[in-house]
Amino acid sequence: MRIENKAHRLKAIIQGYERVAIAFSGGVDSSLLLKCALDTLGAGNIVVLFGKSELLKPAEVERAENWLADNGYPNGIELERVLLRPLLWKEFVNNPEDRCYLCKLRVYTAFRERMEKRGISILMDGTNIDDLKGNRAGLRAIHELGVKMPLVEAGLDKMEVRKLSQQLGLAVWYQPSSSCLATRVPAGTKITGDLLQKIRIWEDGVERFGFVGCRVRLDSGREDTVYVEIGGGDFEALLNPAIRLAMLRFFQNSGVKKVFLDLEGRS
Image (cartoon, rainbow, N blue to C red; front, side, top):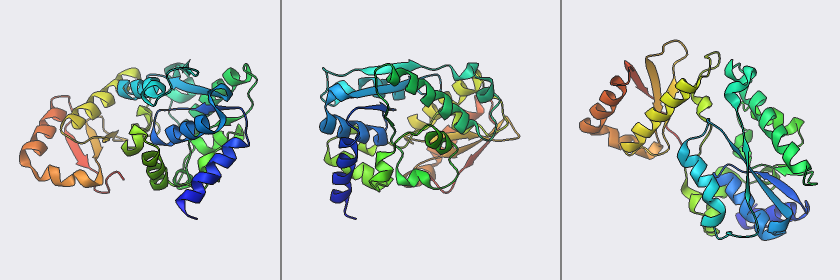
């Protein structure tokens, strides 16, 4: 199906919901969903819910909180912040294999409580068809809570989401995919505020070397070992010895002894 037809189908799907709440992160997927909902249903029929927590980087919070004004919606609609405290959730901190399911269940249940007070029964999120691939525990919570996935229903994959976002003038169309900081911690390793802060500092440091959208993942057995993921187009920069050695010193100065590079890269 042509992307134009998928875009038309997306709007038709949203139109059929009439009044909705949107789980919004500020990333490209939920941005496209929000833009299409605003253009289709109008601001008065939409509640935008943003889960704010220590799992997000300050830049990600700022991008989400400023999205409406940055995209020409200064009046008539507000971002509703839902303050989350995952480090107080025992099942999250213990970090079992199904942590993403447990977390998503908590977050979207909190969203449902907010929207139902407004008389809204439909919650949508920005899952696309590429997200259905692999083992994504959070999808289980989405299905259990009856959350709608219009991008999936329209058959849109990540590349098509980016293309449509660019056509609609959304500044985030090129933004690298993001996920909460806890995804860098292997299952079974206890999640703490100090650990999340370390990951945040490491990734901010690597980004300062020019590797935007990088990931720094922890080793499951050694606290002094990390795995760095960079974009597929960024590997050539690491051929520069000055950059590579400076990055190595950066990690060593923070107590990391071994730094491995994921050769698959981030798409």
